Amino acid sequence: MAISFVRIDDRVIHGQLMTRWAKERPCDGIVAIDDAVAADPLLSQVMKGAVTDVKVWLFDTQTAITKLPKVIASEKKYFVIAKSPVTLQNICKAGIDISNLNNNINVGPMSARADTVTIGSNQCVNPAEIAAFDYLTELGHQIDFRLVPDASAYSWQDAQAKLNK
Amino acid sequence: MIHFVIATHGPLAEALITSAKMVFGELPSTSSVSLTEAGGIELFKQDFAIHMVALQQQKLDGIVVLCDLECGTPYNVACTYAFDDSLPVPITVLTGINFPTLLMAADLTEENDPTSVAHTLKQEALGTIVVAKKPATVEQDDDF
Image 1 (cartoon, rainbow over the protein chains, first blue to last red):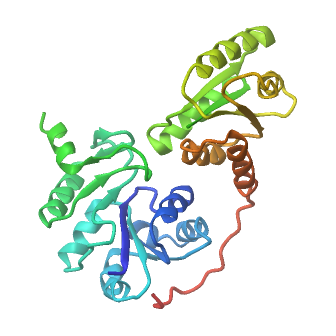
Image 2 (cartoon, each protein chain N blue to C red):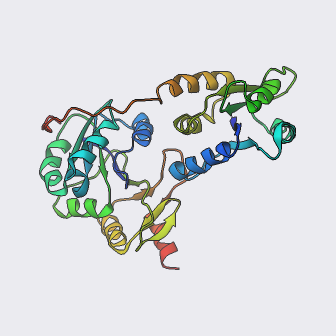
Image 3 (tube, rainbow over the protein chains, first blue to last red):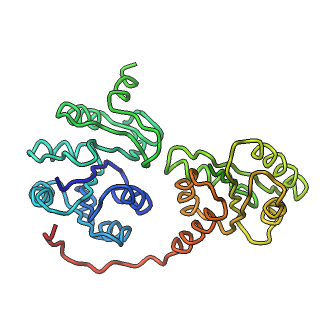
């Protein structure tokens, strides 16, 4: 199993936090997936510049679906970072298994937007993201909302209970 | 257990904590004391003293005071406590605090030696001032 950590983070690659998570999980490289970022060469360069000590790939969803099987077959250990749970949903729907050594899908910051509800500190979801988390949970993935490694956490089930109140 | 006190000129200390919470959600074992224009040196000394008395009563291994400017008032006042060997909880002052260094401090609250924590943070802090460099544009290889 080459995926050591899966994270949803709306900043995609964030130097400080990657350094922090990478300190505590094996990380030979980062595979970041987002259609908008991958389509923007300047933004891609900025994101890649944020991490200098390991190799970084930035893929759109479609490219990720073709490349991930090779990543998963590797002897090395990789972080997979997506900007949105919807991206991970699409990847799973394409048949890619994102089971990982961390045994869950970690969720970092998801900023407030016009159509979102807040489920935790700096963690907000819109209807499409709610459906994506439902889908990922039904696939058997544990969702772990946790900004940094030793911070307090809650699950998607906790968030659902809050949303259904 | 280490407690961090941010002591600065004006609203910087409180603002650093507010900003750090944006990244981390929470920032335990960190508090702030500010020197204000209205209150001046005397009020700062009082506020800092109240803060130190409260912290000295907690079960801490040490306190690291993070100041903004060497030889500024917050630094000078903090040093009068740090250099006082009679206090039960040892205090170390580190000056030149910035945002990434504060975030790194959050990793060190479980430590027990404030001086060694301050030296670790200083080493880390030196690497936080960086001139942004445009990476070379390279095709992405398949060498996973």
